[in-house]
Image (cartoon, rainbow, N blue to C red):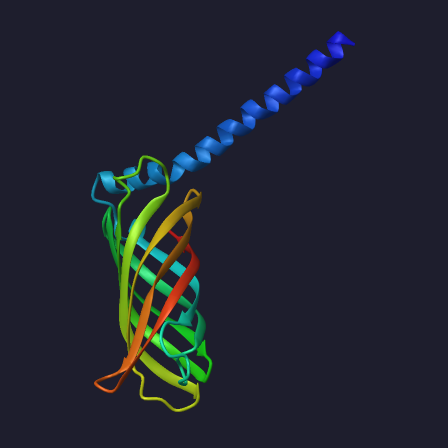
Length: 191
């Protein structure tokens, strides 16, 4: 009976030791890749990334106008890491509102603060701005938006990360009306 307990104990210990190594290697790989890529001047192909996000927001003001109560959408960004901590990109998407559908085309920039935190999670500031095209629903003259925010980039595999963030999405018809939303985004970044 004593030998049976020792065998179970050793089996559980072996499983914990081997799985712990895999988990820690997975967490370490993101920053290791980041350091390797940006150590020497990397080629263009290693600096390009894709970010696909699902976003949703709730109006932050009166909540009685078309295109003001809620919004959901999906967007894709093709970005370029200028330096290790700065990236820029161009994106497009589709967003549905309480009164119609708009399609944004935008520019976005991100500043990563990975040197401030020792772990593999990267906090970042982001800012996007662009033009909105009305593709359906109630006619509107809303055509410009800005979206500053903060977020975290959480590594999942060697060249894939989960991006989560919150921000303030503001859209307006120039010199006439403005609507703001508190937004949340979740997406995947592929290097």
